[in-house]
Length: 136
Image (cartoon, rainbow, N blue to C red; front, side):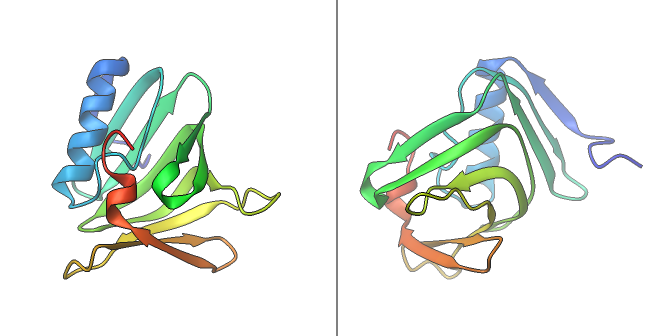
């Protein structure tokens, strides 16, 4: 069985972006966490929490408040749950001259105003949640 089987799919930039932001908000994550461009498709399987995003090309975004540049690939997928994105693929954060993949994003529950990004190497970086608000 394919991971995206039985999923809700929105096609096109406007509808796809709207769905991605509403999923982030529904699960208690900052709305600006996924600054996407030229979205082709966004999908979500409610039974498993699996979500996927397809955009025309990768996008780099500078989160100025966090002093962090993040690269979002053309294919992004993960499992989303309350205050957490896990098994994330397609997202990398620049650390010095390297781009290690980000594998998990977790906001504290109960809220402390902090959000944590875990890399494949097991390194976790913590930032203020407001640094990833919509429009940042």
